[in-house]
Image (cartoon, rainbow over the protein chains, first blue to last red):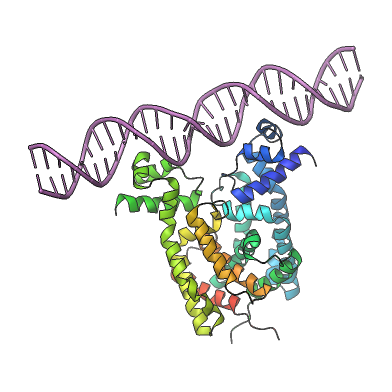
Length: 182
Length: 182
DNA sequence: CAGTTTCTTGACCGATCGGTCAGCTACGGT
DNA sequence: ACCGTAGCTGACCGATCGGTCAAGAAACTG
């Protein structure tokens, strides 16, 4: 583990728990056991550190984005996309937490603005859908991210990632493919 | 509109859009057209201003909290509770946005800690439920709040509050009362 | 009118913020 | 052995933060 990558991990944890504005470079330096000046040697600014911390998750989000159309396909295709999406959230849950909770306040930071654009692109990609469909999509996306961000607070310890993954995939599947009311 | 209540409204808007830490007392004073010292005359501290801005929503949340049990009752009872909950989110959407996006970073502020306790109390009130039930509840709560917080960004302008309300009540109802899979 | 309370303000305070910089150490290449 | 570079640091900078305070303006009370 290089110093730079360790700083990136420490920063992501701090940004997720205390917020970007609530985390000082000094605090990151202390947790990593280096000086503040050393942090700014590896990352030219606090914003560059945020960019480095979020970029891996953003690239993966961009990678699965074109497959959003699978949501309108067969049940197998739909489940396939949901598995990818839930796994993305599980693997990059801290980055997702930062984005969900702070994208509003950090809209002028390039990496956050890019993520907003990606999400908006997903929402706009299917203009023919009804308001109900859009509400379903937003509740599923925001709800899943909120759940993972707060999992430690509101769910029992017995909810390990594997069980959570299965449950989320099943429930998001139901939510996005509602059983028609007769 | 008294100066104090106007300051409370301005502050809530700023806290929701830029975040509590991202909003300075000076910025609130400027938007309200008064001096920084005047803000601190009406509210003894920035934290007291946050408390005043969130308290109305918190009281209403506490008021509907005992009726959470209705979610396990008849369809009519369940819909009745959902109507109250969605109306609470719609009426206090800025406060809900502040809580959803910043409760993690503001956990040591009394009014936020109290709100966290209320939500946790709701989650703990029904210990017999399965993990799926808990996931449904968290996705519904977090998803609905996220949707309203980001409504301006991700939903078309045609989505007025009345239509949003109907859609949310219907979809949350489906989510919390799933059709059993045969 | 005088007296008192409410409101508002500019000046000021210590603390902390993000960021800069000169200099120190350690080490691989020649 | 020499040198260049990478890594790291303490000292320092201007700006802004939340908060205090004394004093003036305004409005109610007798």
